[in-house]
Length: 446
Image 1: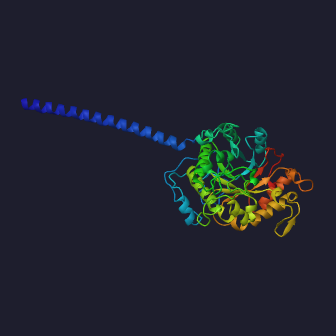
Image 2 (image 1 turned 180 degrees about the vertical axis):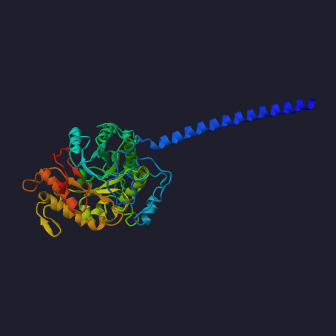
Image 3 (image 1 turned 135 degrees about the horizontal axis):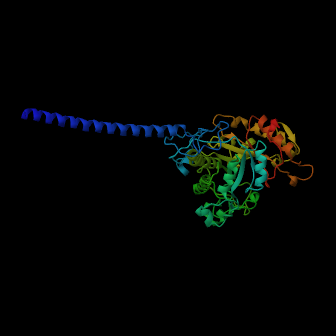
């Protein structure tokens, strides 16, 4: 009997243990199933939910620069940094003076826009110009971030504010938001090396003569320029650009990215170093643009463009005086170049394509078409920046009676037709007062 009791007791304990084990396993199974359900629901929610931060703009055309375009990408950096290729050959003098190009530590695929733009100064006539954009082919505004006289937006840049030439004309974030709400691409224009205030306050940053005295240039309104050879000036301009990008600007456009023209008020010559021992002027401008391309375009995925004198497209000699060498400036990797092809800026009696134009301003189609074709051998080469000319949208009455014409819608649109017939598409219209005739601005499409 005792053995049977021991045996029964053992069996009872065994059954109890088994029940406990079963309950434990059942509880674990329920927990596991619950966690799996939560995980699966979270995963499916991520897959099926629509992102709320889709970019406003998509890539509408491919760029011929060496950057990779990405239609769906804004400015969120990727973790993989592709190798940065340079189309321009290495220059020993440039490397000796400036060292290697900056290392890229962050990469964002380029997002660009097929620009049909107008210049609007400091947000002038904003309502009327938004109305124009909403009813035409115009899709982009160029706004002044920095002019030769100072900064136009609400910058916090320490150097700019210390100079006392920050004159806020608009709130940049509010402006960008209003443009984006209307599907308009914002291009921030920065006047680069024409900067008398900075040159006066910091002579060490100015173009000087051999005695380190800052120079004033007749053809530049007797104003001073900061030195394009000095990388401290590059850093200042790039810092302003990055701040504007963080406030909503979609593209950076560098204007006056050149050396001054004409003689000086003292008759002294600019001194950049011993001739033959310093890089050329074109090498200095190219190196600045290459640096900006790496630190802005490659890093933030925001296009960089540069304004170029129209004469540089057809005259390499004049281009090299300016530091704008048309055959090579478009190989710096910046997204686009904007030659200013204004018929009014061509001398009376200009010869293009073997034809003499006594009054170039009265032949808008021909001047734009043949000027662009003159440089096409270079800008049609692989890897060259997109060519996006500035077109005249103003009357040049200062030329005198008989030498100018009214630039109404038909005259302006004929320039756009010339751009298209030259195998290009993008353009920006320039009117200092930001006043443009009503029209579609479609070129051959009317």
